[in-house]
Length: 200
Image: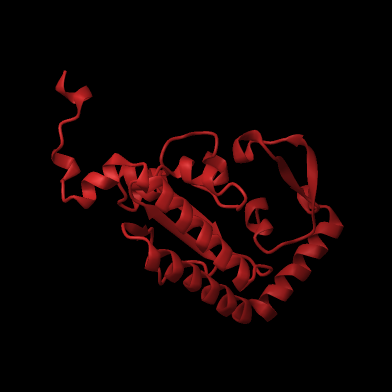
């Protein structure tokens, strides 16, 4: 099992002292106790896998419920929101939503007290839209406006509600400042608009 896959089942781990490449070099890499095949880490990973086997059905049901709660609250309050990827075939704690007419980076800054991302950790050093979302068929605009939410076993319904409220509040505020959103609501097809930069 590689390091990335092992991390997903919460084995023993410790923080490395050196700054790594994750989160735009703003947090250290995580060094696992089982790195380089150290025996205590391998035992810990084995125990983590055993617990996963025993508790995963119940945990998956709980996480799916919280994920659905988050989706319903956000998409019930905001228009022009889109689920990225299949909703039926995804991890129970994963939710990826694009918010049209909102820049993902602006949204991230607006909810900077919440741990979410606009892409994978390995591509966090670039502002390019997610190549995964583009491969799924999302255009650059929607790929740029995507936010990935990750739920875990220690999250609560109260935290889900807080996140939903903060996202709704922030997206609504950003859209009030967006001339594109206003034009779209007036029925203007933005694809037919000839912008000043294109006219020269």
